[in-house]
Amino acid sequence: MIRFRLSIVYNFFSVIILVCLASVSASFAQKYEPAYTELPRIFSFPYMDTSVINNKLALNSTLAQTNPEEAILEFKRLLKISKNSNYEYGIIQSLIGMGILKMKGGYTNEALAVFKNLERMCKKSQNARIYLGSVNNLAGIILDKMGKREEAMKYFLNALKELENNPQSTLRIEIIYNNIGNLFFNYIGDTKKVITYLNQAEANASKAKNYRVLGQILINKALYFKKTDDPKTAKATFLSALKLGQEQHDTLLQYRVLIRLALSDLDDNSPQKRLAYFKMAERLMPNGENDVEQDIYYLRIRAELHRDLGEYGSAIRLFQQAVALGEQYQLINQVERAYSSLSEVYFTVGQYKKAYEARINFQKLRDSAVRLE
Image (cartoon, rainbow, N blue to C red):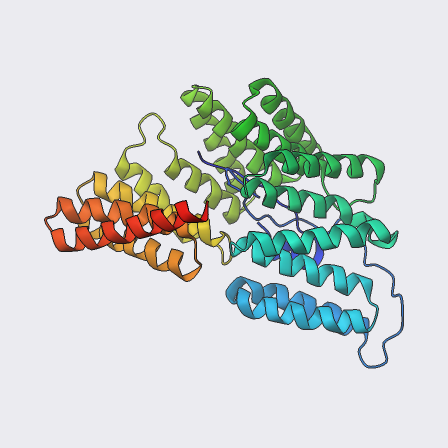
């Protein structure tokens, strides 16, 4: 099931957030305009001015797009400096940056620990309270990704409650409505509640002229129409989101619509047309847009489309890329699926030894997963 995701990032981290997702999972990263002012300085710095930390945070957000591992290390250094100087704003922003990058890298347990730590901090500090809704929303996205749906819903509802009780919250109401709708869409199956939440999200996004969010909500509504067997409306809604992205010169929104069209088997979406959508999306893809698991998923889908067209060489190459990337980040489920498909393609083209080796690797991963359960 395709998952869709919206997540929130403000101020310095507008360039690195991602969803969730989807269904999604799609959980996907977003960037938003700042919705708060900088926290007041709490103590003077004996060796570093707060503006220096703020500048480093901003520079590190740019680094996160090209070298996330180095960015995490830099966030850790800034966190230590901020703690030594009792600079609450620097502590919170460093933790948010670390949590987001860990989430995008597939390290969900570590990311969840970061956001739960942030939740405790935000509850204790009046100044930090404005971040609590956003932190709860991010924790909900991770819990959803981990399959802990009930706990995810609790965090989403807490985020909504925090938003209602704290008008200075950094969380935007259209985001949380969208994410609650997503949870109903993918796992609870109450279609009336899905469309209710998505319509509320769309109305709030339109009113706020939050076009990036509005475009993502249109994507989610298109997925809803697809799931409820209305492909014509789904296709029209996807195209409305694409048109919005073009009108706003928003290449990220256009990228996301094209990816969804590539993933959706709608009407006349032949394998050739879906691969064309993937190629169009690749030309628009910004740095740091997807998390690793999504990257592997897209590689597998593209490989399957090439396989269906009889383009076995391209299929094998993409499945091999999926295996290598999955092994690098220890995403066992993705590697297992890629090996299974790779074995079938090798068998189809008569490379029986390689087919056997891929099948053995698949079986080893399947057996290890069973033992872990």
